[in-house]
Length: 300
Ligand code: NDP
Picture 1 (cartoon, rainbow, N blue to C red):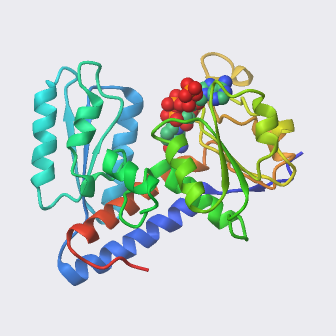
Picture 2: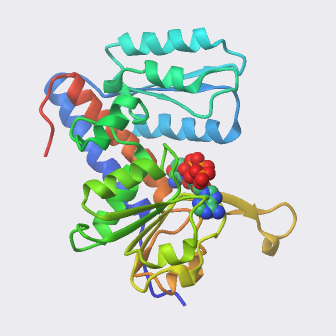
């Protein structure tokens, strides 16, 4: 029986995007410049194609200048590096996003390190990772999924996050680690759990805030959740849906939703939770990057 408040990521993302659209409009009125986003896709991974299309569409809907570069799967590393260098130098472009994963013959780290940190709207460049880690969030570009998760947490909890016990499950560079840094910067007591963590259920039972970023369908069970805790489910897993028969599938998170919702104070659904926030935060990062590159003061 659901008792938790449902955290409506779709609605929050829509309001963030409306705000960004308005701010981009003011920027254009004041400077004649639009935030410019370049999204680069190498190869034909179907999930990546969907992500790239959605990012490009969202940028256009926010009134941004948006360009999409689609390169064949056998693109030479040198050619991709040359494209990134050209985008680094392009004054109409303020944000560069190279969709991951890249084909195996390309050194991902080499490509990410070539992106100008000021244009690194994914927040994966070591300079941005370092700025977040040293507490200089105001100068950093922060990875979109953790940034979006934090927005949802702040809007849900009607008290400061300081002092709360937060458990992040997963330690990837894309989600787990930057999520932990953001919660630490909010003065949570942060635990990072991973595949080698002993007695994960007991670790999670301590948490006032649970962020699950594992990639294992419904791994986090209801009785792991401390009564009243806030649960952010980052996982996106496609599983068979026998109820609909045939080859039907459905999306589930890393948290067993119905069980967890009987214990949690608030919880994100999958889909419709963290997912929509990721693209909204990409738009926010692109606008932030544009204002900084144009030498404008940060907005309140
Ligand atoms: P990774 O595979 O890079 O990382 C998964 C993490 O989970 C690893 O740190 C791993 O530990 C840990 N892990 C694996 N098994 C267990 C276990 N049994 N117990 C505890 N920890 C475990 O995934 P990502 O961080 O990239 O993504 C995580 C999930 O979030 C995926 O479902 C992905 O689809 C989704 N996602 C959603 C996004 C969105 O927009 N909503 C954006 C990005 C990702 P170890 O390090 O020890 O191997």
